[in-house]
Length: 437
Ligand code: ATP
Image (cartoon, rainbow, N blue to C red; front, top):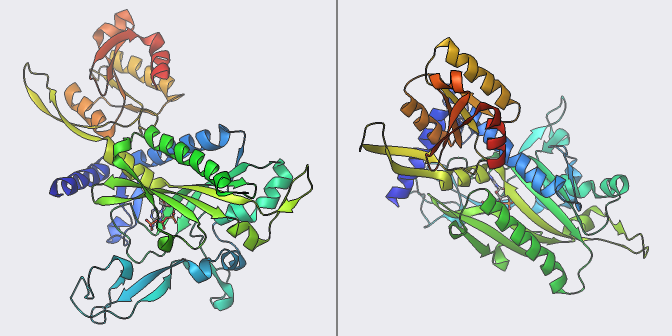
């Protein structure tokens, strides 16, 4: 366990030092469990979202995407059951007034000061604000706690404008907010986060096997996505959520749990939401062939962007012994073994000297490669140190330019994982990388 927490500390420190993730509002002492994504973290989040969108929206005939408002009419949340049911049980310490999720407490005493605890009450997790110039009950609104409702309430708009026929899905990527009682574990549980969600609509199932078939297809699609992000099947555990713990809308849910260094916890979820949402919003589907009108049922695969990033970082983090420039010597190298598509920087361009003859060629190559890939140009310190710096942020390819490059038009490409080096013609570098990424 100590070892695992040690790994978490190393990842948190690397992420700060290299520009993946910073504590939010840091110069003012931070803000409880808020985080900012630096240049590399922003690239990775963008990669995750783009890859997901290409795979599940653009890549499929039966899917469309939307981008709906963060703040919606309160009637949406009444109909969806969130005002009444989106709650966690909360206990408060009568002495220090710290608050805890009752279901996470191990005893009847306050974990912080040992004081007594109040009776548990239901705490609504929707984050509230005011819309407009008055700040009273009538202008109170909520930030969405899930992206799903924006897709449900637009169901008829989407059918009318895009002529989709069942079965089909609507997808959305966007921010969600939850006033979590106990946020924590780095970016795992925050009050502001991003979701990538799919509502997949199917005809009314005549028997369980009908919805189970679609549920199973999505279960496999989620497994494939997880593998695609560089996570091994052995690090994932599918938990069939017990009936008494299901969300208010769900008939069956599978949590895809990941072995985070701080424990086995939910990475993504897959739920059978039945016709709960469309029925509550009163939105029917009309079958154009039979003329029959009914409420479709829904399978919902849901993915957290930050949890995707955190799990990918934990799986990719590797320490290994590697040979140094000196014969027979080794040192420890830290490598983020991200799949190439996910890596924040795809190529580092490293001239062996700062001399103008070399930097001219190197800068031109970097400019050419930037048209297709995220590229980092680095000419400081020894080549060994520069390689290590790129390994640490997971850059799949390093290209060095040396004095021979001036005459033979060749450069050296180094592979992050094998550290093997290959000398190739500058003109084919783009093709070489494109065929490998
Ligand atoms: P948990 O049990 O961890 O609170 P949940 O079951 O409430 O999660 P869902 O409502 O299914 O989560 O949300 C869908 C997805 O959104 C989750 O699988 C997760 O990836 C992400 N997610 C949910 N809550 C948070 C949060 N507070 N911070 C970051 N990501 C979150």
